[in-house]
Length: 388
Image (cartoon, rainbow, N blue to C red; front, top):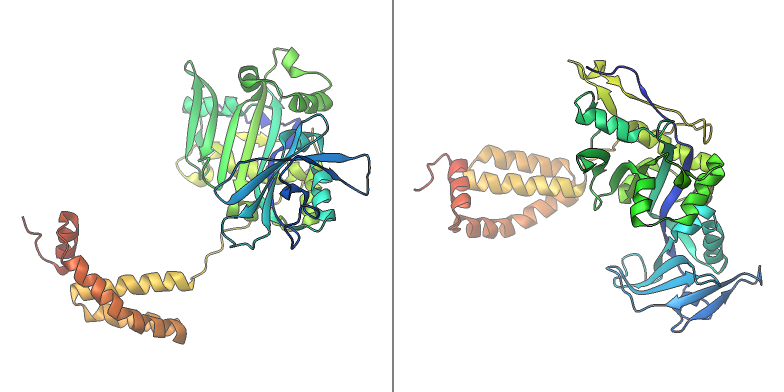
């Protein structure tokens, strides 16, 4: 039987769980100016706060984009941030760098102090590279994400979002779900956080954040804390974070209200389960989000996709039309291609006429292909029967 009562989702805390930012370092390679370029462990003093010392620990690590990596640690050896610099390619300039703030600094709020330390010595903030925001709720009191997923597994509701999604089970019991792919620009998870920490290890800074919000430690009780977590990279950040290139906007993420405002707008669209109807517009949303436990949020829905015809798109179409026209010996297709080229302007029109000789050679090579699928495709375009 379909359940018609909405499920209340009421997070008690919203935190940054991952933050990597792009910055541009000072125009020098001297360790005296940029402490992270040192070859030996060394202190990084802040003249504004002489008692605040950060230790720089160089490593031999490399990444796909950077040839050097250094860790920033406090006096107790706890990691504060990872600095990746010296890019392999200078697409963003030789002084492009990335700062990944340690998880504990995000929950404790120290990441803003570390960020300002970089700004103070002349680093320029560029943009966010990756950000994860997590909303936590108590099972039975607003953390009902697994409940909704179980309803979908029992066909009591249906997912209406645009991501491909996959349920996660433990001994045939649904314990969460993943939406999208980790390698994509948008990835969403809903899962049991307390259960994960009992298996993988407790993170004290997360527990402290829960205690501050609830007044007790859920790990000492039988109550589950469930989590709704959104990971954004690349263009998805710019779609949801309309001010992400503004430094003040970035620092405002240290306030829970601003974090909640961001994830509230995402939750409505990304965790969209409904009771289906014959017409999609008659479907009933099964989730009712409430944010009063964390802040009075203001919804800022993502900007709609902006569609525009680029030069690359026009050139791709022209090439396809010309090659199909040659294979089919169809003058109408040639005429259409010339019309498109002229409509796109003189620069693309000239490009089109220059490229035709190159495309003729490419068509000749394709025509000589012995690949069965290629031969059948060309024959079909010409209206011929493919050879046996």
